[in-house]
Length: 192
Image (cartoon, rainbow, N blue to C red; front, side):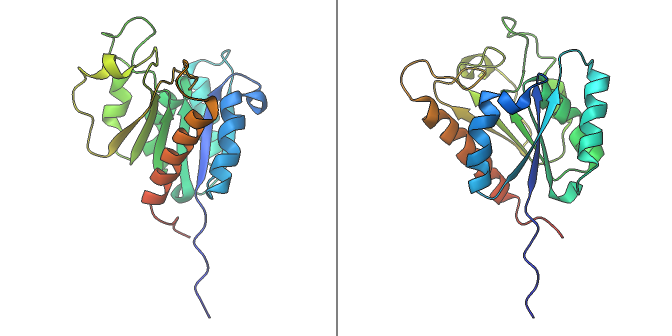
């Protein structure tokens, strides 16, 4: 009798807004990640929720799953909130899309960096090179991130992973999805 196959990892992805089902980033990533064996669980974080309410919603959603199989993630504000919650929830890893290192137009404001420096879980940040909340050029002066925090740059992408003109939109989403799937694979099989 062979051992059961390891349980697949799941990605709880917190996105801003109330209508995540229509979010272009979610619509683009979901089939790409599913094809790679990563189940995506979207979580809406309406702007009307303050940080404490949003974190409670994220915690409640995470607690409906097995944390040893869960990659806690988010886009923008959701990524910052996930960074603050991932270790306390005992999640397998953290995924941050378009991480808000600083507020738009204030690259010297490093408040967004603090939650990342405190994370102990394996972490992947997928960031557009032109992200207004942390572009490649603006982050070149950052202190080194901890060794367990990897940063993947998506060439020519902005905060929402939209291109300027050199690449097609699909290729940016393919790049982001490939980085996410490689990260998930590096975590090894989920513990049953």
